[in-house]
Structures are given as structure tokens and as C-alpha cells.
Amino acid sequence: MSVVILGIESSCDDTSAAIIRDEVILSNVTANQKVHSEYGGVVPELASRTHQQNIIPVVAKAIKDSGISVDDINAVAFTRGPGLMGSLLVGTSFAKGFALARNLPLIEVNHLHAHVLAHFIKENEQDTDQPSFPFLCLLVSGGNSQIIVVKNHLDMEIIGQTIDDAAGEAFDKCAKIMGLPYPGGPLIDKYAKDGDPERFKFSKPRIKNYDYSFSGLKTSFLYFLRDEMKNDPDFIEKNKADLCASLQKTIVDILMDKLVKASKDTGIKQIALAGGVSANSGLREAIKNNRNWETFIPKFSYTTDNAAMIAINGYYKYLKNDFIGQDAVPFARTNF
Ligand code: KG4
Image (cartoon, rainbow, N blue to C red):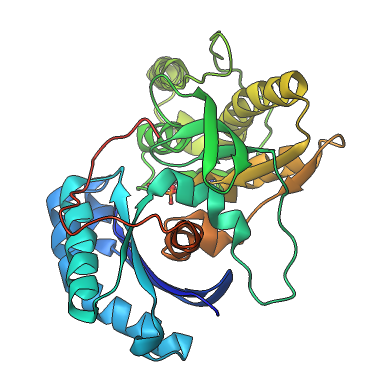
């Protein structure tokens, strides 16, 4: 018998719903929120209000697009955390209401686990391009930078993580220093394509183990620009491409150094990327260019926040009868 899961994601600023049958995606609908762009970052209160407006039409469209009947759904999986509390509450409350009304089991999903499991979403029955266990996953997003040993679908161990800013935050904050709009990561990537990555050198952290740090880089970038702009107020505009290319190279080098070390130490050569920053072309190239590795990068729509990854996680939990009660409350933070 096949298993149909409705997945709901609302942890930050994307409202998303998806239907998965076994591991095959039937629909994945996401409403992005434009309301934050003029503020230079996500405004939590605006995010939760917009989720409330979006959630019903997004779920309705996901069910319609999937071609299934609402009666075919076996369980509702929702992002319980980590994320913005108000945003999570919208998805959690909706999932609980839906499950209660249709007498369905509820499945809680950790947003970070779900990013990793995005690698197992199949486009169709024939899709076999998936890592086998164990593999290393570099999870890089606006809120996280982690190296994870993935032992099986529901057993993961974080062996390294950022002690301050996440990689996406480093991109976004440095972009903001340059006067670029939020989110700046994709713009830095775009301008970097025409720049010289060796032109400027920025500081790299010296951190033990497999942990990351990006706040020193951000500060060195800020001070460097401040000094240069004293001599030439147009310095950023004149050197935008080289600045972006050099900054991107520094961030990618920092990420790769620890990932290479983790792969050497663990002997694991299957490497997967996850999270919004995995869209970065410099990072993708660096990972693919490592000849010792077999690499896995999900489709772009499954790297940013999406409900397909919540639904696939829900599917594996469904197989283990891992359900949660109507008293579940969201959590803003987690240690995994
Ligand atoms: O996983 P994600 O969609 O959600 C959050 O964690 O919020 O990641 C968003 C992050 C942002 O920081 C954004 O700037 C970054 O991913 N990002 C990129 C690129 N595309 C998205 N960073 C660098 N290069 C890109 N092409």
C-alpha cells in the first residue's frame, strides 16, 4: 500500500505545502514573501501575518496539483522547528487543525533534518540519483552551517557547526555592507562571475575541529571597505565584481577546508550539499571539482525552504509509526 503525506513548511518567510506518495513528489507549492525586501531582512511579525494569508490557498493548490483526493492523505507532517516562533505557529496550528478535522496522524519534522533528506525526494519512480549511507552533508543556509554525518534517514550526527554567523548570513551581511538588497547571497554570486577572486584577501578563521566562524570575515570586510572608501567614495561601485568574487572565494574556501578535513578523517567520500547557499555557483563548482568525491546537489527548488522535504521526512517517520499528539508546540531553537 502506498503512503501519501501532506507536508507543511512555515519556519521563516516561505509558506509551502507538498504532497508526496512514497518517495515520489506529486506537488510542491511555495508562496514567497516579498514584504521583507525593503527592510533588509525578515520581519517576524510580518512573516507570520503573511503565512496566515497564504497557508490555505497554498495547501489547497498543493492538493489540487498533486491529482490526489484529500481522502488519500495518510498523515500530515509539519515543521515544528527551528525557526521563527510566530511563523512556526501558523503551520503547526494549521497542520493540527487539518489532522483533527480529517482524523489523521500528525508528524513533527525538524527543519534541519528535512534539508538533509531533500536528497531522497524522487521526481518519478525511476529516479535513483540518491546518496547511500553513510554520507556527509554540508548544510548551509541563512541560519545554519553544519557538517552532518548521515547514518540513515532518521539518524544524523552534527560533527561541525558555526559558532557565530551562518554562511548565508555572511553573504547577506557583507552584501548589506556593500549596499546590496536582501538577500544578498544570490547577488554576490551573480556579480562574482565577472570578478577576480584573487584580487582581495580577507581574513579566515582559525577554529578547531570541524566548526565554522564567519563573524571575523564580516568585520574584516567592513573595515577594509571603510578604509578604502576614505580614499575613494566610489570604491565599492568601481570594484564590485572583484569584491564579490574575492568574498565568495573566501567563504567557499572556509566551507571547503573543513569539509575536506571531515571527509579525510571519517573516510566518507559521498558528499551532499543542502540549504539555500548550495545554490552558490562557486560552492557547487568547488564540490564538483573534488575528484575524490561522489557529490549530490538537490534541485534548486528543494534546496531553499520547501514542504517537499518536510513531506519526505514525514514519510520515513510514518513508516516507523513516529507520530505526535495534538499538544505539540513549535520550538524556535534546537540542537538537532
Ligand atoms: O535555506 P534558505 O533558503 O533559508 C534560510 O535559511 O533562511 O537559505 C537562504 C540563504 C540566504 O542567506 C541567501 O542569501 C543564501 O541562502 N543564498 C545564496 C545563494 N542563493 C541563496 N548565497 C550565496 N549564493 C547564492 N547563489
